[in-house]
Amino acid sequence: MKRIIFGLCLTLASLQAGVAQHAETAIKQLVYSGKSTGSLWAVSVRDSTGKELVSVNSDALITPASNLKLVSSAAFLRYLGADFRFKTQVYGIGMLEDSTWNGDIYIVGSGDPSIGGDLYNDNKWFAFDSILDQLKKFGINRVKGQMIGDESLFDDVPYPGGWSWDDLSFYYATELSPLSFNNNTVDLVVQAKGKSGDRPEIEWFPFNTDYVQFINEQQITGPKTEYKEYYRRVLGTNTIILRSTMPIGYVEEEALSITQPGLYFLDTFIKYAEQRGFSIESGYQVNRVPTDYSEGFIKLAVHESKPLSEFIKQINKKSDNFYTEMLNKAMVVEEIGTQGSTETGIRLIKDFLAEMRVDTSMVEIDDASGMAPTNLIAAKDLSYLLVQYSKQKWFQVFDESLSLAAFDGTLKNRFKNTGLSGNFKGKTGYIGGARTLSGYFRTDKGKLLFVTVATNHFTDKVSVIDAKHQQILEWLYERM
View 1 (cartoon, helix red, strand yellow):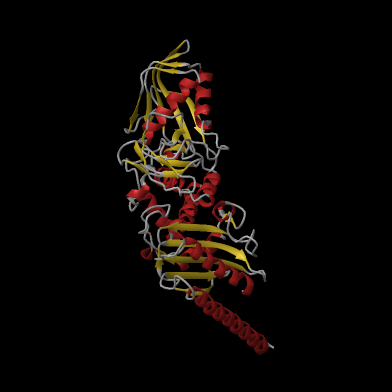
View 2: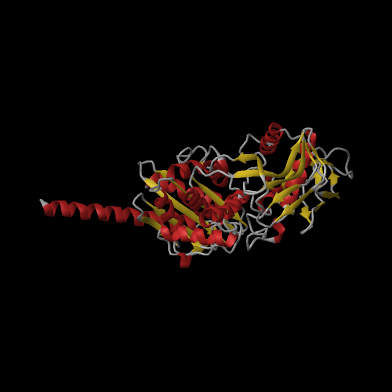
């Protein structure tokens, strides 16, 4: 009887090996047919035990783009916990007489990236209103001293290493500061009103602030012409040059970066406070020297953020670089108790990878969000990590942060009318020449698969690469 069972086990194992070999052959045929055959393709498919069923260059080091957020966001959950909240605190030094605060008020940056409305139904003033309501409740309507922004929680390095200079004008590559507002951007709206040859009209949030200067050299063109984008902030300044051309009637919205976020926060806070009837008489400045608020200071207000679980959704569903990099620095403060820095955060992420039994000597990380083209990791490690995550106590929060195919996030418009619709949960990634996709789904036969598909060094349109990625996943869904 034992021989029969042993024989059946061998037969089953042989069948499974045969299926896996057939799958690998079929996936290779898909990869190396049609366009982009000269690109670097990597595919890794695992079952729920972690066994790799399909391996196409899966041990090759690839640029993961935003698939790196799958690593960073899990590390944040590991070190900070799903219930972690930022606390932006406000202290006063001085005294209250009638409704006037005679002295300075300090707003202490906590690294909260959500002060700008993303997690508050796009109410960009939510955090400011929270602070101002508390000041008013304390009895303050007028401040004779300065507003001082405390930026000492993070180091003064504004960007992670490896970012391209021509990205730095845009919302996806903004400066980092523990005091940040509106993702450290201004929201520009351009309307091509008028006739061909005219300048289009511009306005921007917040309230056409003079914190930035726009040089509007844009031009309206004929009704059948194409929109050609040109926005560039002069690096190191808040001067933004606009040279786009656009057809009559065209409307363009763009979030553009600013420099010196702490000053931007204070400038905007004071202007908004004045709109609400507050008077702040002596201007503002930032302070980078750590201050002991336990003696001589009075706590006036505190804004507490939503829990980390909501931030993780913003990171993975929206692929938000700013949230990722801010949390990377905040993680250092909470875990080690030192000033937040990108480099130390990366060391913690690598420690996390080592805990997950990934060989970190074969991983290169230069930022937390995946913007740096110098990041390197193997596809087999990404698929393996997803299997490992499924065993962690924080997995449900991680799972809820991923995009659902054909329904939300960066997968909202992909895999529609396929068996992967409402089934595949995952994360996309893209920077120039690198397109990645990782996640998990159940096949038509009910088998749970964890998948990473990566294409590097391609020259085709992204849509061509996406189509082939979909072919691979559909084949797995139908045949495995």
